[in-house]
Image (spheres, rainbow, N blue to C red):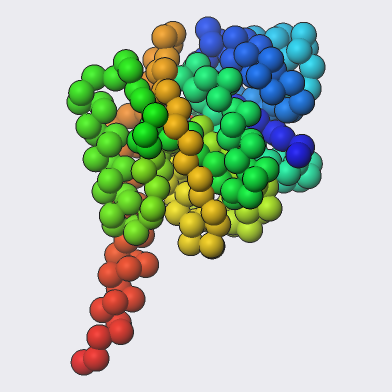
Length: 244
Ligand SMILES: Nc1nc2c(ncn2[C@@H]2O[C@H](COP(=O)(O)OP(=O)(O)O)[C@@H](O)[C@H]2O)c(=O)[nH]1
Ligand SMILES: [Mg+2]
């Protein structure tokens, strides 16, 4: 299966070269596309230099910071145009261990439309997170699952492999969310179109270098969108079916 790993980057100059090297040794046959938003720390330059050494690494540079969801929409559109069979999402800050990727790819090969690296299935873990951050993520995930009727324990996870045919069936331009909302929306769309989602346990290491780019705006966006999708797809249709 021809695989493209899409790596969104913003200010990851300290991490990207090691991510690329570890990725190449974990999955030597996969091509890599870095989508950088003109990071001021020259992440793109570092990625190009490392990519030159490793081969089969492309770097797409966009004009300015436009969000994680938008970076993936660009990367996936490119991947679909180039005819890949599998499209992979992974953070570029070493939170996601590249060594776990072969098991996600095997799950897609075995029939999954979306193989998710999950922190909230038995065997999954987040050793370094504070109780506050852990609770926010855990309850956010539970809320999304309950409101959307989505049978996924970790729909905000950003470590995943999609069957490309499933992504091509989704109108990426109509996917608006960024950050966590983007991850939930993509899982929701796969589920709603009858796709098979498989969750595999991962250890989420969290970054050791650099800082998170996620903000409270991104969390609020996800909560508002999930609530809206739940009202639109579950509550309103039920009300309409009621006589009188
Ligand atoms: N291209 C691009 N990448 C982004 C943007 N925001 C975040 N990222 C990347 O998305 C990944 C996850 O972001 P991060 O800040 O680590 O999120 P967190 O792990 O939830 O705190 C990292 O590789 C970031 O560099 C953005 O606006 N544009
Ligand atoms: Mg991170």
